[in-house]
Length: 297
Image (cartoon, rainbow, N blue to C red; front, side, top):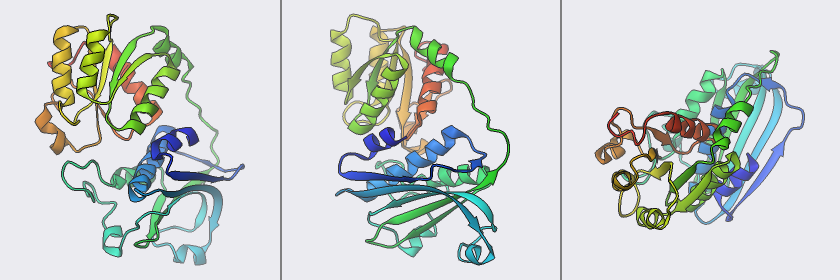
């Protein structure tokens, strides 16, 4: 994920990887662990608006009774450690005590998803692991994730057939996203799979692209809340011109914030940000497998 994370955090933040070459195995879903890394990277980026350093480490660790005593709730044993450290603004004790609460956010209304750490916490607990945080205001934050080692045989799901099926149709996607780093990353991923992609930073640019494009636009992949026209309004406008076009929305906002935009109706698909490569592939695939547009499904 080095390339993905580098694009996500931007050029002002240096990414350093300190990865063990011989890690033990853990029992976890690859896509979910990628989601954990994406969430932590987004939080680190937001905590370093003037730039900084993001360090990701992995190592096999053994915690005895003494070591576990300094880590509340952690059972002694053998683990794989994933440590994510940033040099950002840091958090005080009061904030640290609440960051894993569902729906808790440090951002004001209309400013995005906040920390999103309840999702991270849930993923780690599902794998039988632990997540701890150490932070100090002005000195950054460190998240330590301990996943128990397992000795089971490795299970590797095959994606070859799905990749081939996704890319073989040469379908065209109109991608509309106002955050440049996410737009470029998503566009690159879709093109690697085999899609043709037009990119737009807002609805007005998307409408202009659609007006100048004579070829079919098979899928509109659009953010919900954008400056000017919303993603739903854009989809409604383009659907009149291109009734066979399918629509997949993206959003990093809560359901309460996007509900007024009319995208929570039955049959409407939403790709939650930040998303992994697998999640993007799966939901794009599902959008093409479903019915056109999907507003009235």
